[in-house]
Amino acid sequence: MNYKNLGLRVGLEIHQQLDTKHKLFCNCPIKKSTEFPIEVKRRLRAVAGELGDFDPAALYEFLRGKSFVYRSDPESSCLIEVDEEPPKPLNKEALEIVIQVCKILNCNIVDEVHVMRKTVIDGSSVSAFQRTVMIGYDGYLETSFGKINIQTICLEEDAAPALKREGGVVEYRLDRLGIPLVEITTSAEIKLPEQAREVAEKLGMILRSTKVQRGIGTIRQDVNVSIEEGARIEIKGFQELGKIEALISNEAARQVALLEIKNELKKRGKGEIKEKDVTHLFKETKCNFIHRIVSEGGKVFAVLLPKFAGLLKKQCGDRTFGKELSAYAEAYGYGIIHSDEELDKYQLGFEFDEMRKEFGAGERDLILISAGKNPEKAVKAIIERAEHYYIGVPEETRISDNSGSKYTRPLPGSERMYPETDVPPIRIDKKLLDSIKVPKTLLEKGKELEKELPKEVINQLIKSKTYKLFEELRRFNVDPTLIANTLLSTAKDLKRKGFAVEKITKSDWEYLFGLIEKGKISKNAIPDALILITQGKKAEIERQFKQLSDEELRKIVSEAVKNNPEMKESALMGIIMAKVKNRASGERVSKLLRTMTNN
Image (tube, rainbow, N blue to C red; front, side, top):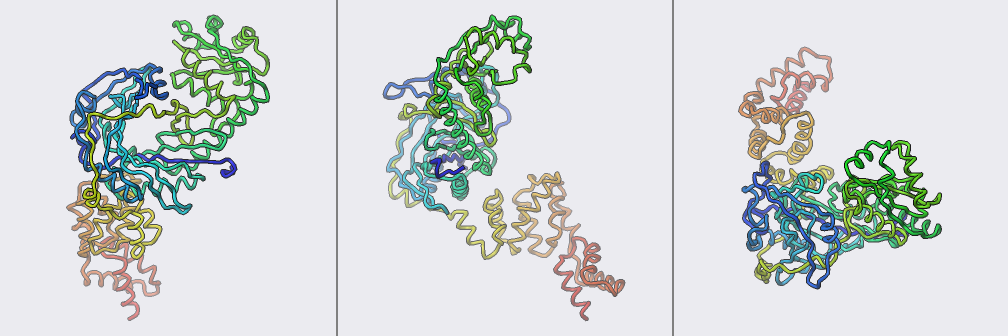
């Protein structure tokens, strides 16, 4: 696609958990629980904002009629998480980390911190709101494409993750609720998918230069995408940086397809969308799952979409328009079947013919059905979106699924924000700002390493979780390339082979490189030594890999040369190394062999 002609605009919101001693508004430690003995049940309601208006996203979630079960562990959450106790003062450690990020990204920093509440009633917060604090604004990030403006940097509390969804009930765990997050929002001036990837990578590197959590789920990206004639779409929960270009490309293609559908509908002419309870037509249906629904007291609702015939087969990015439309019913827990499908596989040909008669439908009209206990809300959602397709692309919030996305709810509005009165403001004065030092970023540290390591190793190292460990191990008088390759490659290879590399502690690594520094074992022994550590046999390393004395090694080399007088040096090296195994380094053997053969 020609993104310039499309008028592609992309903005990013990066959410990263901070590595603090406790949560944002309580003293609970940050830990992942395995058992949740306490259960709390809630129903959440939408309430009007400060000016009397309802946030559309909150109202939508309320109308879905969900109820929520919250499971907690007293070791990782308290009464504040279940909204039974007022919040404690803002976590100062988290505030200082976010100020560091603001300084790195050239932001203006507010004079006074005021906590706000952001209405969230999808169940991910027991209180029905998320506390958020703006710390920095009007910053910028340097990229190879030029400066990208940073709109805001906020400190906020993380949401609760869902455990399971069953019917109208969603279960959440509260160990993650309240963990401090930094949120970085860029302006929507990113013009290319590859540019978005670079911005996301650089922001990730900057965040990892400060005190942040590492691992799956600790960083999430919301991607806002629009094209010139389309609409702003917020795609939430994206984690796979390697697929961000595909995600943006897919969304652009989806919006292009929806605009093509709009133009086609305009040509065909607009008719009246109708809905009807057609349960009576399915009393004797041969379709097993619909027969079961009807026999259990369920309903079947039909919708007539005039002039839509054939359009639901059209590709909208990575899925058909039919799949796109069905997502609005899925948001209420229902599916759809439509007349653009092969109806024989459902054994529904007769019923669709009868519905055509009842609606007076023509050849270019499409009919779809949704069946269940109460499919009315799902049907109304489909009708609402179908009406919008005559206009263009509907603004909405979607959730990423692989390289595509599906509808979740309407875009939230400004009505969702209102002041938090339980947390006092914090003054940010010059003394506080001057006391917060900016750390070197990983990119800066990477440049410093260019004197010691190959560039490809540096790029891997600064992006890996092991960089901090590498820095600590550099105090040993050991080749830094050896340390880096051991952490990046050797450990990874052993894990792939099934060894429990995660059991190797920092002290184990220090012990291993201490032995190498002192010449007690050779670098060749590293893989086997690591295997012993994973097997709980660390004490055997020195005994098994004790270095041969000069006399012992000279004897082995001399014997190999004597027994193979015509053999080349490279072949002799193979014989000798097989005999000495890991009790002498290759450099040591090669040096001695060269000396003896030259003599």
